[in-house]
Length: 345
Ligand code: DAH
Image (tube, rainbow, N blue to C red):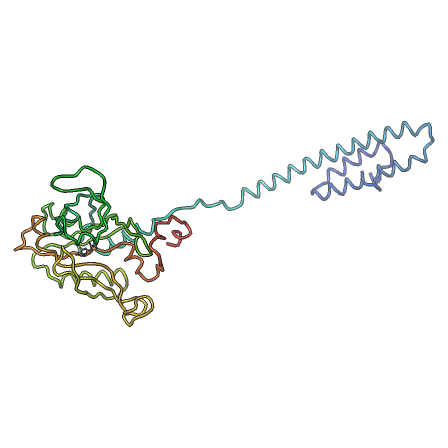
């Protein structure tokens, strides 16, 4: 059918046209062709003036009815077409790559702990953990710091409000992992190669201190152990943890539980000992170490005539921050739980 020009044929023509529709654009073209101002129905309405007045009323009513039917037909069809369009999008949506659920990863401190453990393992160091809340005896007394000794002040201890134990004293949040030394000796198994990594607490907070942090403590007790062994182990750790180009040095210091005592420094990873903005004098301080004091060995029931030993104890976070590449300039970030920070590691 070419052109409909009467009421009877127009619906037939419209159905044929609608069969050919393949896009929303086709629908709007058809709507315009039939219902637009210059469309078929519009034209038929304006032609009404040529019809005799007695027929006009009847014809007009029929035209109006036709107009409604045409509108309905087009609407119905375009509705169907819209559904098709929706399903095209649904298909498209189904084929989009899925969103990956976010997968967490091991926290940087746990990573540091396992790295440190791995470095010491080949030397036979056995990883242990001792109470994070312990009796004053293991924390101070057994480490050659009697009750009134001023050296205790250094540890800025949190005491726990709890009943006192007559022999072992008050409960404290362990301010250092050295409290594990005598506990390890009291197991009665010699020789000892202990690596105690635990959470500690001290009343301090600034860029390089937090009230809750981790320490790792090495303790070796055997026959004929000397400072040379300590130096060897420290150097081994420096090279394997920080890099082959790193070295350690010992500075004389004083701890109650070691004699002699040292502070251990590592040469700066940036200037390699020449001196720069970060390290000032070319060296960075790692932590304490020394030869275990005979009084500590005695507290642990170790025969001081036969055995000797060395120990060292450093902060996990501090040590990890000194590793080149980590670029952490404030220890508090490690505990901020800010994903933007944590996701970097
Ligand atoms: N416990 C000491 C501290 O927290 C560090 C330390 C020094 C540990 C010397 C040792 C050591 O084992 O021998 O400051």
